[in-house]
Length: 494
Image (cartoon, rainbow, N blue to C red; front, side, top):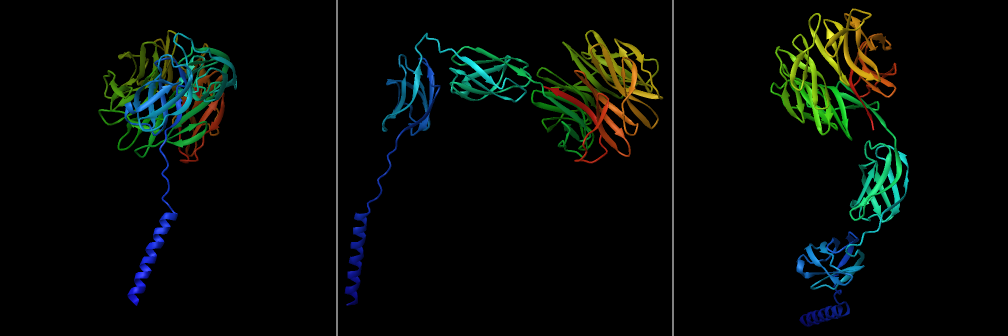
């Protein structure tokens, strides 16, 4: 009896499963279809190559059937999601369609066909907004017949190319580049000729850079530079476009010449594994650093080291300048004040001994060098030495600049164990204010009617300072604390 009940149970279960399958058939599979998401460009003439993006294309070129307004096109390449096809002659304006050997054709966006020898519609520029601004300002340009493909639009501010952020046929958003100046905004496309629009007024934006022991300050904000050693010294700052270069030395084992580009440190090659960058110049696409390698005066052009001729056991470069095709370096060779013009060593005349050049400026055909000779501040104009007046016993020159016909020379004037930060205007000495009457000036810049000096004020610890038009300002030392000096500066007015 038990066996009979078991058989009845099994038969009933099988019957139930059979009925369940009949009442719940498997789901119908979703058919695979082609989709067309976009085409680029959206207009053109015969032989224009159009990129079609979508899904479920054939990876076999010959299995894809592409038509422009119903006219079959040649397919150049194909993946599952991208097809490149050539616009056929006489296609006319109409939708782009794609089918394959196994999937039905679908229509995509309309392609505007431009007959051969028919000029594309002319661009018009109706307005720009805003009409003024500085570097990185986003400007909206409104008009007609722009390309809706962002990269096909060519926007310039006063002749300088700009990055286009977005595009429609009637509106473009473009970013103002660095330093174009005031001038018209122009727009062209890969299909249309350039059209000139309203004038954009470029406003200069001043960014201040100061640097010294381990740190630099951008607009007064202190930042520590990365280094491989225990101590770094930054003696020169320059910018090129949006790139910021700082040069100096790092001490991983001994002092080594280095530079930082946008905060990334790079070691410069040496033969002695000792040295320092003391000055730099950017000329076109070439970047020059100069200083010393061991006892050898050297410069690096685009990272390649070049030694300068010398005689004594100790020589180095303190300053450099480029005028036209001529390149000048200056410093000392032993106890001689020297300069190199295009690699040729020249000795500056002195009345005593132990002289050095620490600054230079070229104005027209006149070449000025500044420095010291046996503890006194001197400068040379076209090779003739001039002694600067001092109020104390010892002095030295650290920087020079011209404003119109006025020559400014900055440096120090003091006695043993103390010095005052000073400058001379056309030979007359002026003392820069300090709270403790002790300090140093290391660099200076004149921008318009503003005169900047940078250096340190000496009290129980060194304090980094700068002076603008005679007013002293203290730089922040919140990150590393006291004991810092500001040795170099650069004013970026773009």
